[in-house]
Image 1 (cartoon, rainbow, N blue to C red):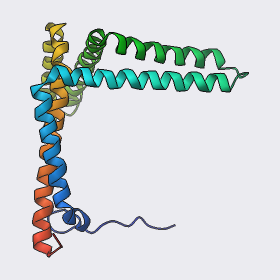
Image 2: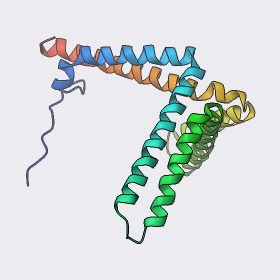
Image 3: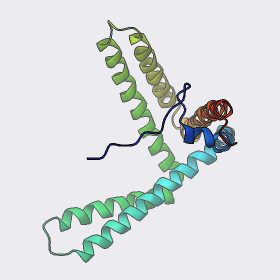
Image 4: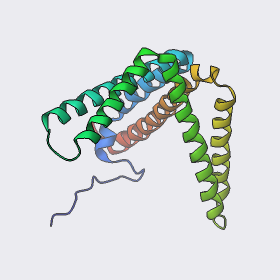
Length: 196
């Protein structure tokens, strides 16, 4: 059995291949930050764009499922597969035909996600209570619950901004992480004399 080869790390924990690609990390980070700021500036537009992508994905999944079902007739799961394909197709068409209702539906999914993840974080925090840092889990859980309740209390108007806002925050924070890795990789490249 062959062992997996690991890229050697230098003292800062940055691999040599990562150090050589520090400019790419900067470029990706800057693009993500610009996209995040654009999403924060235009949350309704981004929310509708995400909703349209989900709608088209459902349509494509539904059509693919139905095509498969009609090509593979005669097996026991025909009716169930037909129903699943029809549900995906109908859901996608509904999202595309009524984007505002689709945006509200996606916002309800976001609310449920924040509420459940918040409750789970709080439970994990109390379960880890003797350990240092357990309070951070509880705090993050309370923040998740607060965000879920805020979006819920502002429905239906929150549907106009919540999805785009969350996408913007995610892009912005990911871009900052890429910039940080680019900086560390650039430092490593300078220390090791790797080609810029």
